[in-house]
Image (cartoon, rainbow, N blue to C red; front, top):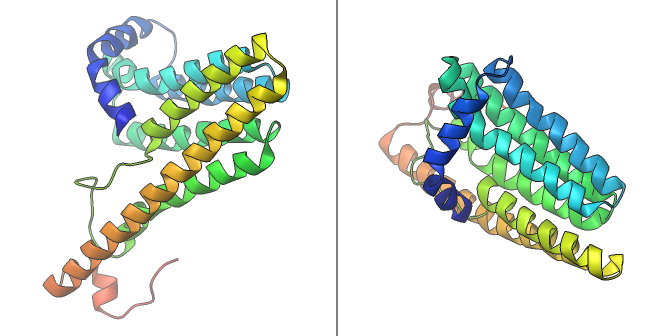
Length: 220
């Protein structure tokens, strides 16, 4: 929610940068996939406990995600599969970030990852019961929020690591990951509640998916 508002204000700049980058000899999907490579470098930097370097590559990985839409548009390669592939790469890159943090603080990294997975699954799962879209879904703890918190927390930890002993940086990293966990729990609860309202409304209006109306076995 917060990250999305911030992103909208910078859309014009991002479009110009994405268009400039379109001279690179990459397809739109290849450009999107570079986010995973950058995330892996960030994770390795976390393994080395080099927080400033990790911060740089986390930001670069996120920038690829921000710019890949305008890159694809400039290349005239926008597609439905590209939109799907972008979402998959986003999830992979975010998981890689948390794997990197697990080398520093495994418990808090697992909490952040678990919360992220729960919140992310709460929305698409309702699509197996009713026809749904992104309209009016609660947005607390969504990906843009999580990554904004992650960048700010990692920035603070990186600065502290240069001037104080490393254990204080670890405390900041743990607090950051725990905040992400709390945000995702709130978002998860909101989405489950909203999904319940949508499903109850669909039941009353007879708008459940056909396999449910016919009594077929529900998918997992």
